[in-house]
Image (cartoon, rainbow over all chains, first blue to last red; front, side):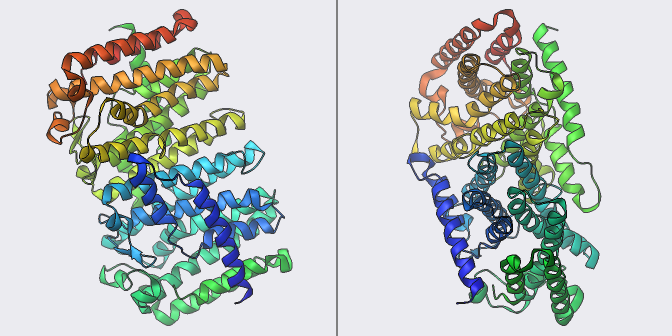
Length: 295
Length: 295
């Protein structure tokens, strides 16, 4: 096991334990909702966004008691976006993390409500005084998450993606769309960890540069995987994008061009970490992992 | 025009102007999302929840600059719950406020995303420093809204309602379900207004008593209207509940029993306002209005 694999595993274990503690357990008539929340979020996954929160927080010696709750909150927002995005009216996916999607395992209404409550719970967690003793830091996280996840962030990107299916996208518009759809939440993950540690404006800016580059690289490798991977390896339906006529980085840049672009972005991301020296090794390795990942 | 009608009209005008300013305007590929957000929230409606925020805030001489943003935020959360609740997988309604519902006017994906962003924007607004200068007050509102709207509040109530369709409900379980589904947000509206004004624990408790009673009365009159009203007058499909075999207060208590129950609840609500004297006349009249309303 590499250092990164070990660090990812430890981070995922800590965040999973927190998620398990944060999501209500089943009782009576609410049972179905809580079960669906757990089913969607406890299905494994790389927990990349939580890892970015913890690794960025570690740069500033933030206690894990502070960084784990926001890490769990970001995973909730990510999961909610997957649950709603998989719905028949959206991407209509039936497989996610090697299991039936929530609306298949439960039903559509439950999937809609489970997504809604995961989003809502994320804000409650960021607001909790266990996350940070200073209310002004917590409120800054709440507002930053709302911007990253909202109509001018993640959901805005999802909308552009859906619209783009019919209107066609070029490299610039795909890049803009992905910065919102995937990038905004990855950027928030790095910001949240650093902000908890009172990072300087300069450090926050360096991390923003890192996050923007890995965000775009992440989406390009997603497109590459979608084009070449098998469903069994990816744990979700692949080769869907081309079938739906979606404009992807691979469609616009070609396979080799997309690969080159991802490599350049990862190099840029790593350059932004220079000021942090070896303390940023986890973030450096995470960048490398994004390039090599198989699912 | 009665005093209440005038106060409701003024409050709605102020909140509508704020909503208009808060929701992004259309541009390019985001256009559809912003249009759907506006379509859903600018469709009129009584703006009862914002009125409760402003009226509770007025008890403590809170500047309107502080009370209007949370009032707008609560209307966003209410609207999001209607947009998602009207979806085919949920209540499958095609008419709301005398217009086609969002998924009919746009499409299902847009309705899902518009609801998601309205919820998200509500938290951003509560967190904004224009809402209150004290971050600890803002974070308290964020957490209280998350609890009121989440799995152990409004969405938990929606889930119980859907489950109840198949499992059957009695008076106690209907009451519990409605306290969550409708009551929690009405209670938050009163709490938010009062909290902005630094209300005492005793005053907050009196307003909670008021809100809980009007919340349940509101749902009972909703059931009464559904049973007797016409679609034209209500602005939405009526007599749906009986057709779907839903357990309602009318089904359990009978028409006269439900009416008596609502009257008792409104009397109780008004008794809770005694400590505030004539300053609470707007809240008193709002309680009376809930009993008399025609839509």
